[in-house]
Image (tube, rainbow, N blue to C red):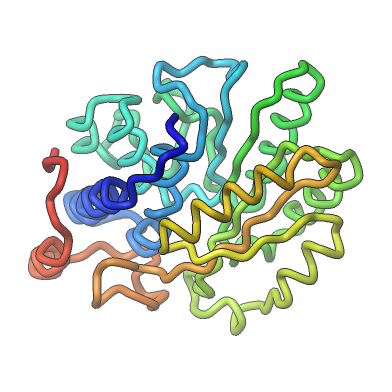
Length: 283
């Protein structure tokens, strides 16, 4: 992929991905729009600029960067990004959360959807999978990176910290992990459900290099990824503590945990779509 960053092109893609998200969730009155909207810049940055990936889907992933989604409920943004980057036909987004289709509510592997390497949605497991894949690459002499995204509420799970400790101890330094740091989870604000601060201090204490970024700002986010790559592969894994807004891009959803897992009604869909430019064509 080119090192030249076309911010306008990325913004256009993000607008379309957000349209896809709200339309997918509305169509079946089920799904998780809030976190998906908040992570749109992250996914578009990875797939359209940062990662070296193959949309023909090499099952073993040799010679390409790998990506894992730990907080699998944000599947709408991942499915849209995969489709828009050529992994499967965009029209297939119309099958989201329908029985017997490949686009289940949480990413699954049994139907062979390209780009999905593990089933996810049981929170706390994604970093373990990422670290295992990254260690395998190191053992095989593969110089590629492995990326993972986790939710901040998910950091209340103990398995995350076991994986964090393992990665640092074993110098699994080809990992670039990110936390969607929006401060919200299904039952309310993270600080009220079970506080996790200070995240930067915690990850550093576990032996990680910690970078902080603005997850809804393409330029800041891509610069952070470039810095992460420059600091990786020197004996320590890297964490991107990524500040985002749940529901970003739709004014009545922004910043509220109430849109974690609620679908818009017909009027709300029209309102949302009026705020999001159709740039690549709706499915």
